[in-house]
Image (cartoon, rainbow, N blue to C red; front, side, top):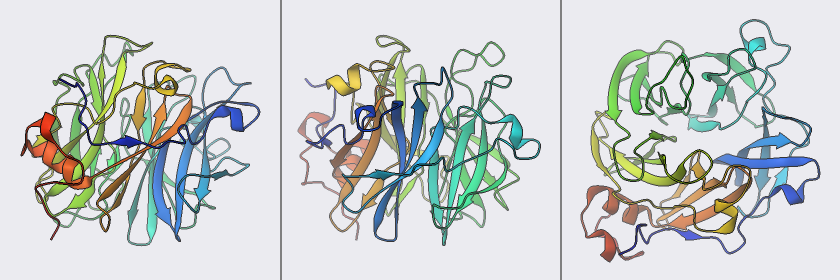
Length: 332
């Protein structure tokens, strides 16, 4: 019996971006994908060999979703900005991007040598050339906050991941919470969503921007188990949330969609890691395009049926009998 759902297919060109393609780069990983003007945009996390820690965000764009051109300069620059943003000039990685109307909102977990535990900075762009910082919208530790793509009940909504890690001040587990806001800046009405309590996510879990389907909000999540790897083993799975009350979980995959299996996922700067920061849904072809980081070193792509993933979340068919391309659910 397989320990992984037979839904996702890795692209044969994986890894589609690697440090070997860019002299001076030590790691290029954990992309946040969106579509813009007919192109696929990835906000990349990059770390250079001269840095012992920290990182920066750069924009990569592609016409075909496989071959990317990476910008020469960082996209998010907080150093030199007025207080409090000038405190956060390192660890600008692992963005989550959500389009609301004509604006792309970017949630970035940030830290520095003094405040290493990450808080989340909200910024925005309309063209992926200019970046406008808005405010810090979470307390630390909150890594992986992700916006919903539309208002629910007249309010903006997001998923949070408070806690996680081994910081002595915040020895909390990594669970997922919900919060809402009238203006994207002031957040409250917090609700617990799901605990890190399943087989492939017993240590901590974290969200990516939700995808709206008629069956519920589909959320790609990562899950960590303490065994294996340099910091545990990272898996990728999914959960489905209620459309009107999105703190209510309709279902979660009982097995991962992806686990570290390939050499570029098992061996790198951090071993045994597959890590998502978002996905692109193509409903016309029933395809989820999942861009993810491999071993905190490379960028990879896997694709699979959206409806089959929803089926797996709801447990509508036995997991070992899921047939990609033949889901029981329909969009219309």
